[in-house]
Amino acid sequence: MSKSQGKTGTRIGIITVRERTYHPNRRLLEAAGRAGCQAMLIHPYHLWPTIEGNALGLIGEHADRLPQVVLPRQGAEIGDTCLALISHFQHMGIALVNDHQAVSIARNKFLTLQTLCAAGLPCPATVFVNDTLGFQPAVDHLGGYPVVVKPVNARQGEGVMLVKDESDANGCVLPTLNRQQGLMVQRYMVPDGRRDIRVLVVGGESVCAACLTPQKGEFRANFHLGGDIRAMDLSADLEKPAVAAAAAVGCDVAGVDMMVDKDGLPQIIEVNYSPGFRGMEAASGLDIAGRIIDLSIKKYQKK
Image 1: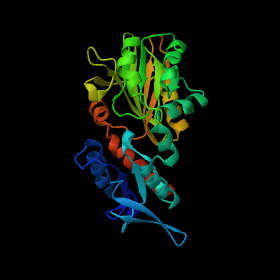
Image 2: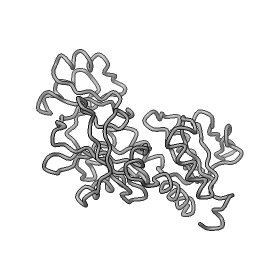
Image 3: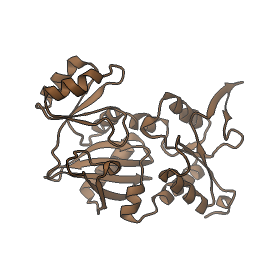
Image 4: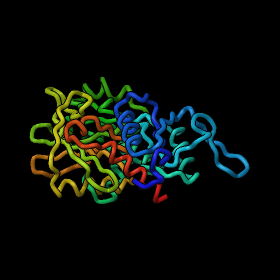
């Protein structure tokens, strides 16, 4: 550690609406303290951008001592107002670990898949629908029922549904389809013989990977839904597209979710710009928070 990173070292801001006891926040604050940094939680609704006299500024919490590098960590709930704050930091010359463009893409699952497909990366067959008139044509295009329906911005598997037939569609999907938001309809991959893998990418490197097994009777392999998570060694055939996916979206830190079929062929499902890592740290024994803080320091020094 350099002398400039001592007890008065890099000021790191973490954009979050959660409290200090929330696992990622607690671990990042601990890691920052160990690195001699001053870390602060920035509530996106308590700090407000200003424009005055051809200068960008901020008022509210922490405005008197702004961070030198910022980690956007609000997650899927992020809205346009927080994106405006992130953009403001960026225009003020403050380093970001996941910049405005990366967060804007990653918060929307369909924009993410568009970006990945344009980069030549494997993605699931998907139709984006913004009206009930398009739902059945989407199902037909994908080969019929069952299909998986997803909102474009949900957290921890919320709102993801397995639609088995037309009755399911009429009862659960069509009445709630919002034209302003739309939804994704995807071809269903059965859990049998399927591997669900999350790869944590930090600074362009695969830090660790884990295989997630859905809880019995559940088709979503989410740790927060009771799924089992186990650390795994990642083959080059899987590591390469995961790292490339984070790079395509522009994320310095990302949780890349993949499904691997029985033939070993991966499909990239999602790139999460603010991945939780409680399960990954527990499964791997690695100090993931420390890796993220180290990257934050390097981003500030480079800036």
